[in-house]
Image (cartoon, rainbow, N blue to C red):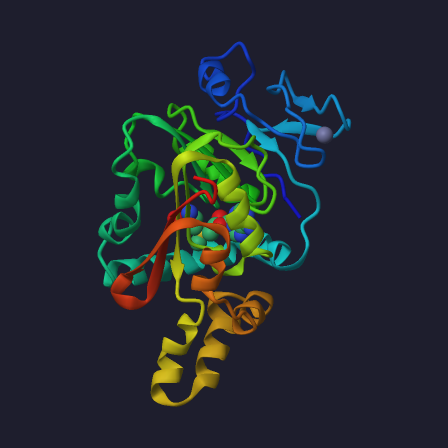
Length: 291
Ligand SMILES: C[S@@+](CC[C@H](N)C(=O)[O-])C[C@H]1O[C@@H](n2cnc3c(N)ncnc32)[C@H](O)[C@@H]1O
Ligand SMILES: [Zn+2]
């Protein structure tokens, strides 16, 4: 489900005659998510795979590289496209403020990209682009996300940054192998439909010698909620269902068991996992497996 935002003025991925053409050619390694053939850059309103014929529309400056979502990705996209996410956002900000300050909490993750002097970075699950302002301006940034509303907000927030933005799943990244110097993901990872596949995809699109950085809160963070601490865990379930995440997302959170270490080990090389946000979050830092 990808509701249109109706916003089409400022574009992140603009028609060839406009100034973002430069940024696009530097990210000219698009790959078909169906047959993996190289895709040419979108001309006018779309590009079509020369091998399998899949068409990739450009809507409001965003490359549309995903079909109908299933499983957790459908639930997550519905949440992040909804007003509920906007209402939940201040709680997320409060959490980050408490556990490292703003932007300190984000820098606990972004410091792992500090070594980059120019180059290409992909943020998977870029949302409305909170991290973009904290990354060096010398970097070319591409972002993908399964939710169109935050992605469009990201486009509108940085009209001059030359971002390349695509509606796409972390499990099917529409770029060729080794395209990026680094791949970043902050938040949302615990509830990806297939986090292992997404991590393998992040490794695939990272060049040899490049870096993959993935951070999120502990998958069982809800067990640190007020209700659990007071001995009434039902209170957390009720608060999440009623006020914060809604019933579908809450069920997803409650039913997710993730062994982050095992997952990271299966996909990455030269792995380190850092504890962040005073122990309430993790940050995976690794390299592609054949590095
Ligand atoms: C908590 S928000 C974080 C946004 C941004 N990275 C930040 O740090 O503010 C998580 C984002 O991940 C996106 N997301 C969730 N599952 C995804 C998936 N499987 N592939 C790509 N993006 C995904 C959501 O739509 C949402 O915008
Ligand atoms: Zn194809």
